[in-house]
Length: 280
Image 1 (tube, rainbow, N blue to C red):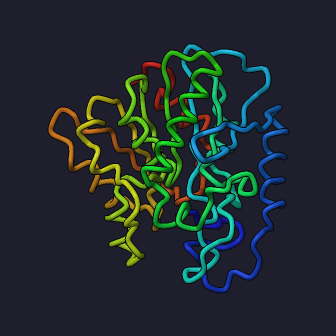
Image 2: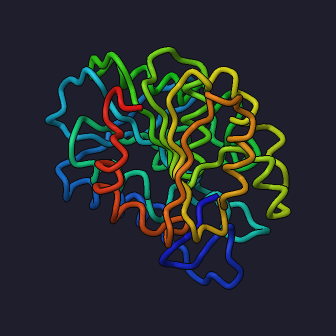
């Protein structure tokens, strides 16, 4: 689900000749975070050691926004699984850094930035099982640890691409999520694999099946008008599950695709859509 925007448009692209090494991808995230005074740290979560980034100055927050990364480099080619899912372009990290106002933390997905620290990492973790019970429970535990670390009372979860599915599946398990925001999110992975004729994610939970647990939670789903990967029909497949009066807000952003230009324009999107605590 991650497409290599500046390198070559992926899931995965034929003819993509060079993919940055694991070390280069980690360096990209570290350098981006350091430019804003943020640092990485590990969050134990069941079988995994997840990686998070935040400002060392952040000590506590009554309301905390947690940004969840996309699927990263799940595949090197359409027929070749990646050895490591660390993203080439950490879009959710860029969005977190550009939030502007309010406390925020970035949370990577299992095996991103830290595969050597995770004996539980295997290719299925970032392919057919990317939204598995094991993965969702680990991510939920990490969210709980971040909430405790910063003594937060309520949360906003912002998920990019596959991170949108994770955000929704986590929110369905919790009673402290004030809002869920997805950006180019995987709201119905069956609709996504059917549309692109990809192998179904047989080992994964699907947000569309959790709509009854999610209808009580305010949601905003942002879709790029030029996104050929996570296109509008996929979001509409999710939205259609909800009864009248409980339909989540769906907003199409003209000219945006799967990666452009969410990071660049995130400050204005965040402000315009009132994504802070308690906003509906």
